[in-house]
View 1 (cartoon, rainbow, N blue to C red):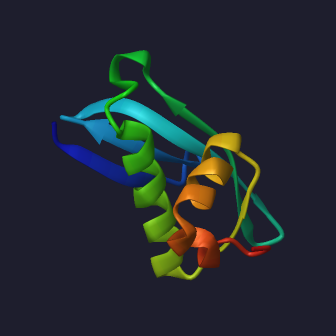
View 2: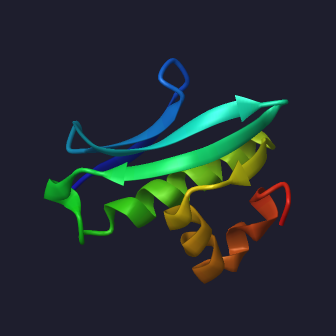
Length: 94
């Protein structure tokens, strides 16, 4: 399965495509110049296949590369960052 994570600023979300089919997304809001990651959703067809983790890594890598200030309220992403402390530096209030 070919996975690609892209930012879709028009919809304010990071999307993951699995073989060109939308497999999930991370919704975000922009508050005072900070990207707030509020919700992660993976299509049921792709659950249990690592799509959520790939989406999290892809989004956090892009945010880190851009130097964005990030706050996380999504429980899935909070747990992901706890398990992968290499991403703690991406979060503004970490």
